[in-house]
Length: 336
Ligand code: NDP
Ligand code: PYC
Image (cartoon, rainbow, N blue to C red; front, top):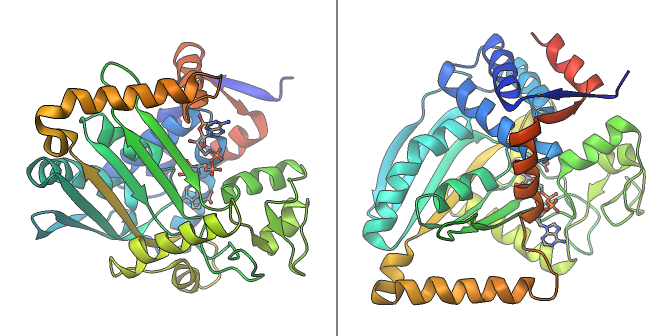
């Protein structure tokens, strides 16, 4: 019997939707979450695909999330939009605010959307890609739970704090990167722990502060930032911009809010959109060509653009469906 089961993307979306609505999420939340989970599985981002259904359901059962919360919008200024998620998941808030963010960016050149009081578990590339699909440049970031020690420290202060960017490329996939400011997303360490696999020793330290290859020990200890002090500074910037500046929780505060129940982090998110037409005016075409020359330069000696692996995985999944570990799929189906 194969260790993997192949599902079409429609089957993944439908299974995700059924699991979420079975556990009390409103139709709008279930649709928004099922879509992003399908996108994660489609692009072979295993840490943020169907595996996340387990965490979503567990978090709802813990009772802090409002599974039927309806986001509300507030115009803070011509360039700043606030979306209050009212302690629901973040994704419905993002989709509710996106058209208004785009409108503000087109009129102001640059605009910010702050999503507040949201439970957040998802990868950020679907969001910056959605911004690039409207012809805008997107940048997004958020804290999470304090799992990551600052460079040189031993105790967790930062979240895994992702930073994602997308630049629209006419007629092609956008230029996109999206990474945790920790050495790796926590979800990847969790997947290693589930499978009993060792991790590289630079991902985390154990509870005694020693580098570890044991995924369980890493989860009990502290994760490391990527690139030492540089990732550490970026992680701090994200705590400031997408925590302190927007009046929402830092990763330490999100962890305290959790009270040890192990639910999805609850905090805010900062999403920025830039309109190249406003910045460049008559020079719009020349600006886009300059960007294309940069991308060609990156790829000239065989380096790959970030997200190229994902776009190749996407093409494969659209044609052949996705492979899901049998054990994980059975665990998810039991939630029905
Ligand atoms: P990875 O380290 O797997 O990838 C980071 C980025 O680098 C991707 O854009 C990837 O593109 C690119 N990349 C990888 N290798 C190369 C290469 N050789 N050349 C060029 N580019 C490359 O991601 P992380 O583990 O850091 O994060 C995974 C996901 O977890 C992210 O989507 C992030 O949003 C999510 N996350 C969410 C959090 C939350 O709070 N919601 C917290 C932390 C993480 P490609 O995908 O094509 O390989
Ligand atoms: O994988 O680090 C992670 C993560 C945190 C919140 C959502 N994903």
